[in-house]
Image (cartoon, rainbow, N blue to C red; front, side, top):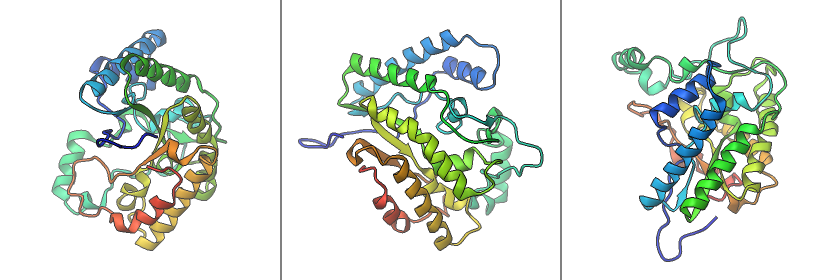
Length: 286
């Protein structure tokens, strides 16, 4: 990971707006609708090349592929991991990931948000874990790596990174109906995602692990817990990240933590001071 010497190097968090035609193609793939897989891969390659060039032109030093090949930063794993079903199992409890504490306290705003957009991402069908998790399809990952490498060669940025979902954030967006125990589920997800993490590093890219679970999960997924109870979960999730990245040098990784990019008052964002010790204990150096 390059560090600043004569000036401040610039970067961003990873995901960038997909071109509308590409988004439609990704949606068709995600929904198992008829689509041309070869045409989709070609379009993703073009979009990655374009978005990397734009980042370089704008003065961004450490660039990404903008997640051009993914429908979202979490749901994409259903195309790569085994035993993930797009429909809720019978009797499964539907997680309320949109029940942010700050929005709940403003009922009129909550009603307007629901009317305008409904449940975020749920139009794609929430993926569920219904059996043992394993990384069984690395073809999409290999395509992503190849596309970013080609774009990197064409635009010659200072450095490039690729995002990957953390075990903790996946526990929110990909609910478990198999392990029936969050500790066991997180460990299994960490073991499975280790394949992706190590492949990104082996390709010569900086690995960014997306960990919104260290910030935004406090006021939605775990809003009924005390701060101390939440911190125990955060430490557990951090240890899962560390276990999954044990073979990757710290200076080859960066960790993304956020409090949610949704429209809302954000009056219940967990203080950085409280989560900071957890972040400093995580292996990624940036």
